[in-house]
Picture 1 (cartoon, rainbow, N blue to C red):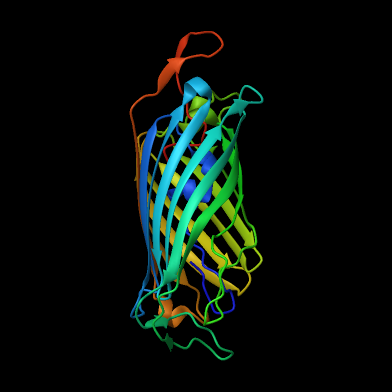
Picture 2 (cartoon, rainbow, N blue to C red):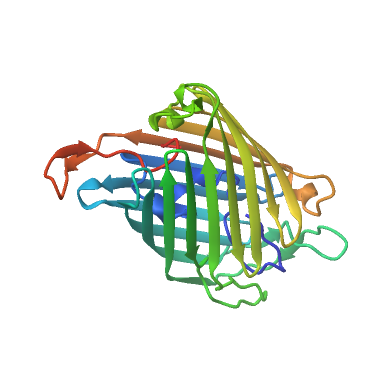
Length: 329
């Protein structure tokens, strides 16, 4: 989360955006090809009296008989100033445009409830012209809620994928502190690819399954850009995976205020299970470095069950294959 009095909005910015799949892009609903559960937690401004904590969980499943997917996520994001509770339902539909490329559009409905804490609070990242200064504000009980919508699109190939999501953060309300949530559209672009280092996929004519074989070593470059009128966030990294182990070196920046974080992720991955830990450190000279100390993220994904059914055209039984790179993430 990158939040200042000048930003005038609230957004959750996970360094590992694919740890929170349905929040990043609703088109991931059902894309893994089986029942999938995920959970993530992020803690920021850990050196302050009131760290920012975000708790997230999601569940999705495919419906191959109708070429669709369904998903649900819940999120509780609590900063030193705001608390945002979100519940979202999503639907996706997939179709092939070639033998190897799948397109998956999606729509998501989000219920949000946002308000200020009913106590005095510290705003740890309030910035003035000379540096970072803690500011104490009086208690407030303002609460507002509503329903919003997010659209998503995912283009998948066995070796790469690219996605787009467009939607609002949520609320539209001015308060006594003159801090309001921005109603301009939030646009997120993201993508990644798999570059095999061992196995048959390193040959000229690889079998498509070898790109995602977990026993083979590979590197996975990834990129995410999120744009809103007061948010311009950039995340990029390079992940290396050997067997079940992976490590990821990444950079995250608030382009508007030139805040740069360097992150390192480590974790375990298999065809049905993935868990990881990420730590962010602000670069030397950042106005927020004294308050941030370090930001921590922990996530887990679990795939279970097999989805099978009858083809709507031929009536033959078949098993659903994954539409994403290296699922279940």
